[in-house]
Image 1 (cartoon, rainbow, N blue to C red):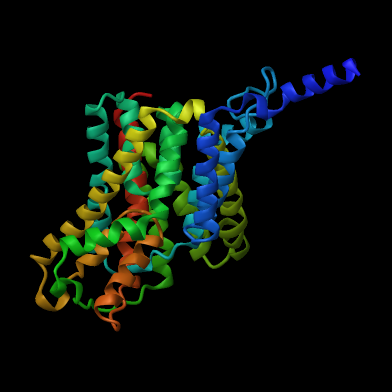
Image 2: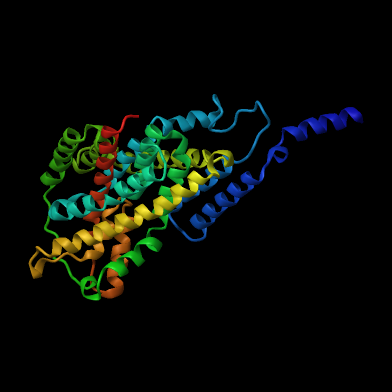
Length: 381
């Protein structure tokens, strides 16, 4: 009987119940909250569901010497997490984004590209504030990318410059992507007038198939020559797009826009979530990152709106830009464009802004990748 009790005691000491700490319980509650938001509220379930379950994975403790977490060398999760640390998964997601993106709205109205560029002010604002708060210059660069509302780029930069901050940076970036409607609508109403929100824009011109094929080639060459460090992201984005637009590789386009991007999203979500073990995540730096992420996202949205208003000063009365679409300059595609459409329809049920908003929205994807390349080029890592 005594031997049986000793065996039971030994087994019990190997379970997670013995090693569970309050921090793990807090993170488990956060993970369940993410899952709830994804399932019950429908907030970006493709992102929040794997991240939420990943948080559960990362906060089940084990006995000393048992390798199960992303931080335990040789564990299964650590091998999967290598795709995050080495920057493998984000370019794969960019290929998938390119394979499902229609750049024709941007090509038909090139001035809207400038709005996508202006919205990147959120990245550099967060970078400067982070640095002033005591983050190292590499950490500040990684935190700043949250302002682009671009999860894959945030992970790519933090993996290269601040791998110890991947968890909070990625969670912040994807959380704010899911909260786009909550954050952006008050900013839009605060910075625009009723008259501006009622502006109807001219329908975009038809873009020829030749233009659609030439665009990813020209855009890649120009961007890569200007900012070579952006090549892995811009290159994969444009490679995916030409596969889509060429008309001769439909099977590759379907794979890129479905299976490939889904697999990469699952792996990123689960492993990034699993990197949020309480001992690494629950600290003052994580709180600061979440605050800076919210600030940078607000600044980015405001930057796009205000730049659209500035452009209107130089445009004829019959060709004004509805500044609502300026908020779509951040790269959360197509969430921000849908928010612009929703706000526009609230003001005028016959005003369809979605196709116009997609132009700065996809320009924001390119802009955030270029901003990341600039930071990588200027800051040693």
